[in-house]
Length: 79
Image 1 (cartoon, rainbow, N blue to C red):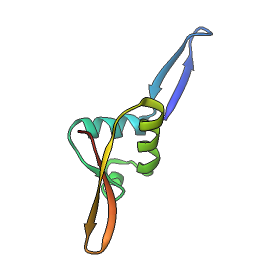
Image 2 (cartoon, rainbow, N blue to C red):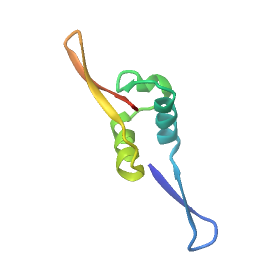
Image 3 (cartoon, rainbow, N blue to C red):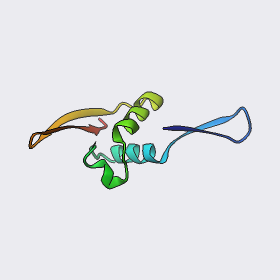
Image 4 (cartoon, helix red, strand yellow):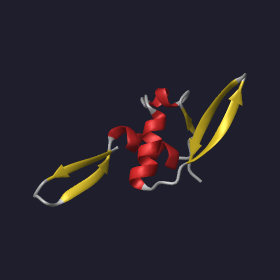
């Protein structure tokens, strides 16, 4: 989820990948994302993007288990 761009070595600038930025922006807007809803926003690997945001950027993303008609999945959100 992190990309390093080098303008003048050894100075590096860290920024979000497009999908991580999209996930983070949606979560900041108060949206709840799941593997079911994420593709409508063009996010194809939501668990990976959530892991990247948590592990590499220290963002505290919460989740809740949802059980809908026998299908159980995680719904991610920011508190």
